[in-house]
Every structure is written in structure tokens, then in C-alpha cells.
Image (cartoon, rainbow over all chains, first blue to last red; front, side):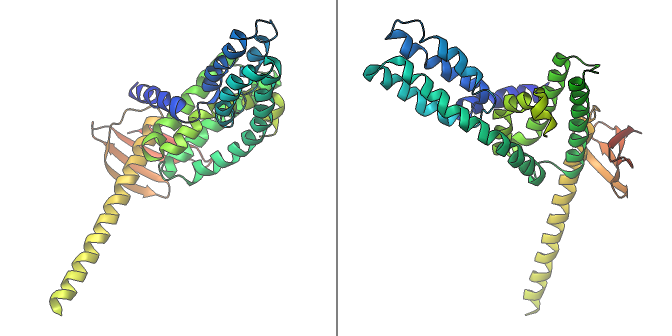
Length: 199
Length: 81
């Protein structure tokens, strides 16, 4: 319970300060829509923002950098030109950026987890056992022979992430924040059968 | 000259003891985290004894004793003693 509290306390600053993965993407995305929505009354303006939060979701680490510059652009663009070209621009920027780092982050995160001294050998091995168990469950889920429903898998995943974060938050806060920010992206990969098969 | 040698020896001994203590403490933290990860209560490991490779007996501050080891399949197991 204490770990949960500590994590929740830890996660809020991460999302606010650093790269707030999907959570942030959803936060920033709403900021984009209002700008076009206020100036141009046409209906197409609200439509793109709804799609926008879905696209950046897969790769949170890249989303924040793309989202930051996009908000000023989106705010400035409508003043000069039509809102429609301004809205697709952030999407186009975030989509390729999202695809790239997601694969890179997986490898780098894995390596950083292996290298970190914040977690002892026994603990790492124990965590690996639990990760393997979850991967087995997910494999069964994708094969259709799932004993556990998706909601329960998500619970297990969340619990495992919280364990990792609670172990890292004091010894390696940077890695902890990196993992916290890519939490949704990782889940997206795990839930996508094709991406999961490539893990 | 002799005083200087003594100082060096004591410094070396002190460093060795410090590093041993640090290693012991980190080992204790590792064991404690492992015990907790496996769902057993342990607020702090106050004593640990190495039985074999990857096989430890840990005593927690609350008096609980656990055997922490890796089975042949590579799984970390925690047994309450």
C-alpha cells in the first residue's frame, strides 16, 4: 500500500515534469483542439483532435516532445491560416516519431533495467520470473486459450510495473520515470498480437 | 615511518570493512525486496546466511526467517522457515 502511494506520488510529477506518456498526450491533445475550435467554427476542426490522442498513445516518450512544439504551432497557425492544415501537422509529426522510439525504447529500457544497480540480482531474477509469467498469460490470451480476461491481465501488468517502479524510484529515478512514461506504450505492444509476436 | 604504516594498514582495513558492510547491506536489501516481491512480509533483513550458490537464509527484523533460493528452473523461491 505504501508502495502504491509512493508510486502515485511519484508518477504525478513524472507526467507533469517529464514525458507524461499517454496521459500527457491526452492532456496536451485537448489543448490543441480548443485553439482551432474557438477561431474556426467549422465542424471538421474538432474531429482531428479526437484522433490525435489515439495516435500518440502507442509511443509516449516521443509524444511529449512532439506535443510541446505542436501546441504553440497549433495556437499560432490558426491565426495565419486555416485550422485544418494546422491540426494534421502535429499528427504527422507525432506518428513517425511514435513508431521509431517505441522499438528503440524497448531495447534501451531492457538494457537499462539489466544494468541498473538499484535492483539486486535476486530481485531482478524474481521480477523476470513474474514478467515471464505475465508473458505466458498474454501468449495464451492472444492464442485464444486465455484463462484470464484482459482486465485481469492489465491488473497484473499494472501491479508488475508498480513493483518495478517502487524498486527503482529511489535508486534510479530516471529509469523509473522512463518506464512510467512508456507504461501505456508497452501495454499497447503487449495487446497488439503482431507486435507481441515480435517481442 | 612506522606510524605512517599503521595508518595505512588501518585505512585499508577500514575501507575493506566499509565495502564489506556495504555489500552486506545491499545483499540484505536485495533479499528483503525479493521476499516482499514474493508476497511475504519483511520490513528489513537483519541477518543473512549464505547456504550455497544463490541460496540464502534471511532473518527479518520482525523475526520471520526465510530461505531464498533459485530452483533448477531458474525461478526465485521464498520459503518461510
